[in-house]
View 1 (spheres, rainbow, N blue to C red):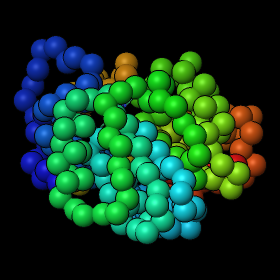
View 2 (cartoon, rainbow, N blue to C red):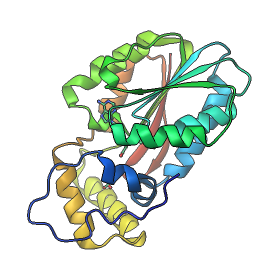
View 3 (cartoon, rainbow, N blue to C red):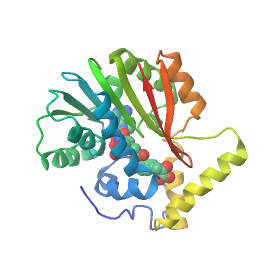
View 4 (cartoon, rainbow, N blue to C red):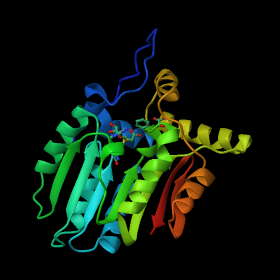
Length: 243
Ligand SMILES: Nc1ncnc2c1ncn2[C@@H]1O[C@H](C[S@+](CC[C@H]([NH3+])C(=O)[O-])CC(=O)[O-])[C@@H](O)[C@H]1O
Ligand SMILES: O=C(O)C(=O)Cc1ccccc1
């Protein structure tokens, strides 16, 4: 995996453009996400553990918004010999190119179809596990329900969706507290005030977090029988929903 340090927002810029998963971001993404998302490594490891429990032989696994392939690699390590196929999808060419290199670095008997495309255009079928690890938050809010409906339809009974997201809180003091704790986490990981504020501006228009209640209601209204939050650190959460 690429370990170059993220200094993308280190220099003051007059105009901050909307955040994009371009070649610069892809080149430092591994460092960026670990220093920005509390619990990221634990979430990636646990996705592998969920795969071990839920992935049935001869089924498909979808990693939607796979970036550099961290979740796919974690899953693939756990499901050797099950004759499964992982479909890993991302619409950033730079991410997909680096993801392919990361996949090539390990041997496995599980085929991975790496697709450079939009997750809204992907057909989902015979799935025992679908992963949306910090991806749904980048879809326009009006497209989120349709994607969840498609995932539900493509999952086999007993199949699982793992949904990780930055979340927001209706309660203003709680929103302020947990957002500040997240900013302290970034400061402790070496990001300056300038880096933090410039990245915040870049994300403003492109990443719109939902509340936990919105996530739960969306999943249950689409038919999921079982739902739980399984991880939360500050304003970052990971949820499971079982069909
Ligand atoms: N419509 C879309 N279609 C396809 N890909 C998309 C779309 N929108 C955004 N992406 C892709 O979703 C990924 C989101 S990052 C996921 C981390 C990864 N899951 C990980 O476990 O390391 C999360 C983050 O950066 O906070 C990026 O690679 C985008 O190109
Ligand atoms: O950095 C942040 O403030 C975040 O909310 C997380 C994040 C991590 C990587 C890319 C975009 C957002």
